[in-house]
Length: 126
Image (cartoon, rainbow, N blue to C red):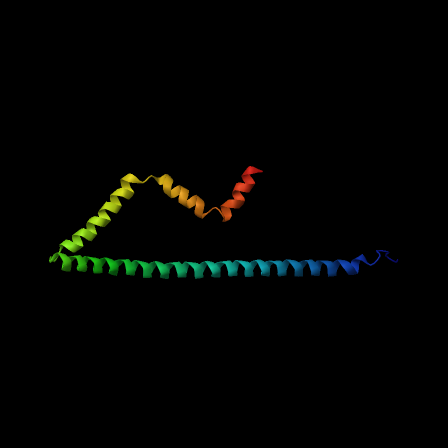
C-alpha cells in the first residue's frame, strides 16, 4: 500500500527540530538578558556602595576638622566637638518630630515615577 500523506511525515521532524531550536535559542536569549541585568545591577550597587563609603568617610573627616577648628577658635579642647554634636542632635530632632513621612513619600514618588511603577499606573488606569 502506498500512503499519500503529501510529504507531511518529512516536514514534521524538521518542524519539530526547528521549533526545539527556536525554544533553545529563546531560552539562551532570556538567560543572556537576565545575566546583563544582573551585571548592570551589580555594577550599580557596587558603584553606589563605593560612593556612599567615600561620602561617609568625607563627612566623618569634615566633622572632625570642624570640631578641631572650633576647638582652636574657642581655645577649648571639647566645645568644638560639642557644637558639631549639637548640630546633629538638632537635625535628628527635626527629622524625628518636625518632618512627616509624607515628605519622604513625595520624594520617593518623584524618584520612582519613571521606573517600573509607571507601567503599573498605566495598567491600573486602563
